[in-house]
Each structure stands twice: as structure tokens, then as C-alpha cells.
Image 1 (cartoon, one colour):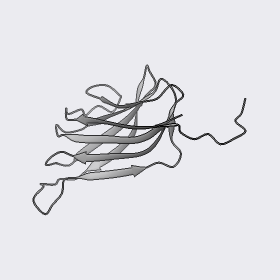
Image 2 (image 1 turned 120 degrees about the horizontal axis):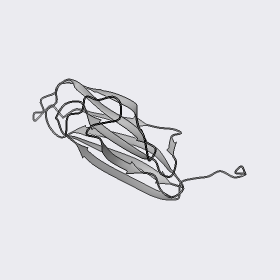
Image 3 (image 1 turned 180 degrees about the vertical axis):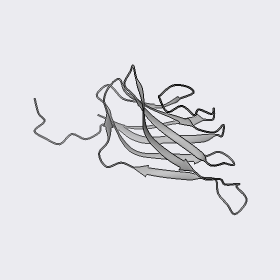
Length: 127
């Protein structure tokens, strides 16, 4: 049955994780950390912030979608080499989604190519 009225998120959800173990795999195996798990009726993801927790070298931060059984590479964000100082902030990126939802049983996961710490923060809402 189709919805006849707009459906909005009912419960705000903010989720975060820190990734720091090097994982060069692209096949959904290795050190991958769960950032956010979908609510009972699914979850809409509005934004994802990724912020280095220290110095970085050239590499990648990868996001995966896990369907309860399989973990698949979804997005990659190129990290540049930065040595933070009093006037140079650590590496960061912000991703805005206009229409991205994950169903019940799914989760958003993350990994880092190099052994460097990153905070991954998701701003979302459960249906």
C-alpha cells in the first residue's frame, strides 16, 4: 500500500564512531566500525561529518552499507596530508544527503585506509 501523505522522520538520531585501524580492503572485510544502525522503521541520513583526530597522510576514509549479512563499499573520501598547528586545522569533510534512507536491519559503517584516527558523525532521523 502506498503512502497518501508525506512521511517525515519522527525521532532524531545522532550517532558517532571513531575509526583508527588501517584497512586497505575494498570488499567489506577487515576493520570496519558501525557508525549508525537503522531504527525499527528505517532511518534517513541527513549529514555525515568526518573529522581527523590528529595528523593525516594521504589516504581514504570509506563508508559501507551493511544489510545484516553483507558489507558493501558505498563511498570513499580522499584524505590529504595535514599536520595540524595553532593555525592549521585537522582534515575534515561534510557530506549532505537530500534523499538517502536505510531500511530496518541495515547499518552505516566506516573504515580508514591508514592507521589514523577519524571521528565519523551521522545526523539522521528514524521513521
